[in-house]
Length: 255
Image 1 (cartoon, one colour):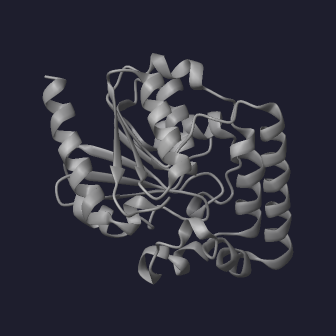
Image 2 (cartoon, rainbow, N blue to C red):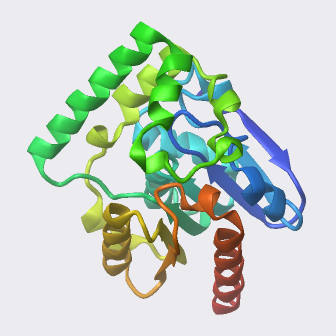
Image 3 (cartoon, rainbow, N blue to C red):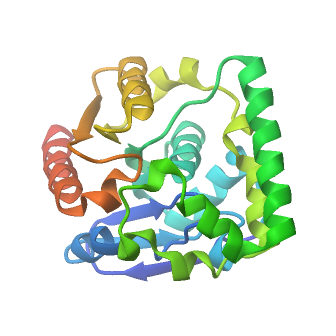
């Protein structure tokens, strides 16, 4: 089995961080800086990204690879990384002490919607292969859902370390349209789960509440005020404060 590229920083309880599409493990910015003060962070490059650019994996296989990379600990996934981390928690609960999902979903249930998303992602993959990473990343970051990112939080230079082949393969193998809906499996998640969305991201706020409802009493939703889809990067101080509070509460509950 291939191994995902990781970087480890800090000492303490393990937090495994899984980034979003076109990012790498180095794109957590002030969130990583703060958490590394008293945690060991495993910064994972997801399949098709960064140092894992040559690893082609669907969400289920990627989830297993992420479990091997992160070991036993708390998994924090954003957007695409949230989809991967959710699969890790469902299929490898032995590795996941706690789960944090930021701007994530358990999948599109309507087959026509899935087909449409697969077609959209195929068009994006072809676009990457045609125009290259730099042009595509600039187009990607110009989308309205990223309007709340400043230059530092956008992490543009690190995104440019990705490859055409890796990003195109990621869309084709682990894009939203490829995700087998797992809403009916969420009730099996026994670990504490925190679901996060920005208050301005109405789509993922609604999805976040549904995730919590489907998981059950061990799940909690937190909205980050005045933030969009990249809530943790737009409002890092607020996000870290909410995360640290939940980590303390969930630790007490497990004693």
